[in-house]
Length: 128
Image (cartoon, rainbow, N blue to C red; front, side):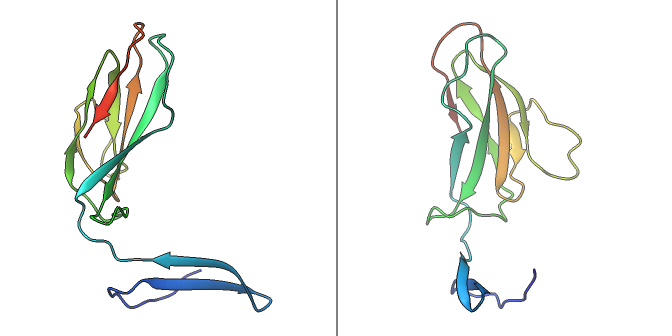
């Protein structure tokens, strides 16, 4: 499904009807520039076996806390503790592979790191 909408400050609203009744609604808002980053891990604990990994997603947010799908800011990823970063990647089509360099540009407002445990149990933290 596709439709054209005017760009503006007011939110765009869409309602899907089935049999004359609203079955789905969606709202889209124009975001401001990226001013913060939300880090989300796919889990809060990994095994201290030197093999287990966690996927950490970085998402660009505007001042209202909304995801900024157009963000392409250069960001750095840092972590503390015995874990190590295996790869840091975005979905940029021209990027040929994930990199171990901890700097990257957001692509569509997203980037991701793969963090691997060590064999020493400890607390590790990620930072932007």
